[in-house]
Length: 137
Image (cartoon, rainbow, N blue to C red; front, side, top):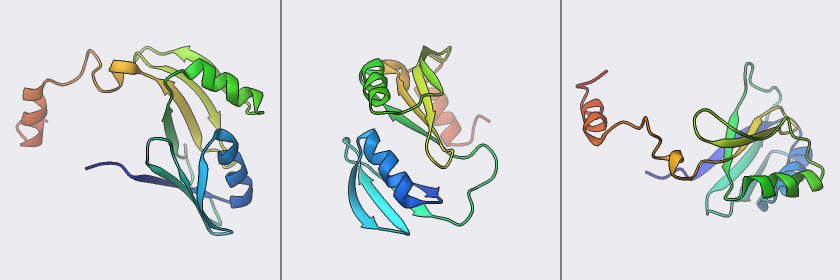
């Protein structure tokens, strides 16, 4: 299985399309005012769909992996993006910076290197197999 696309709700797609274009995404489907889709450099896609009301609660958190997080944050800051947090090393061994899109969705730009898939606390293959069969809970 591969994650292909993430779709998030937006109140005003024109505003959101402008925002995500400034982030560097390439608009590939323009079905405004109801839908827009972007191509990401890794081949996945990201889309927006218009809603009349946003979800309640903490909202949606979207992670964008960057090979050079500090340079990417500096580039986007120069393009006018206002960051909630600057790049910081986290206790879970990722370096992260955060900003919100026009609808309040939390965007986390990060670099994790080897720790993205292989943190020191990763389950062993035996533990993963046992959980898949229901032997561990």
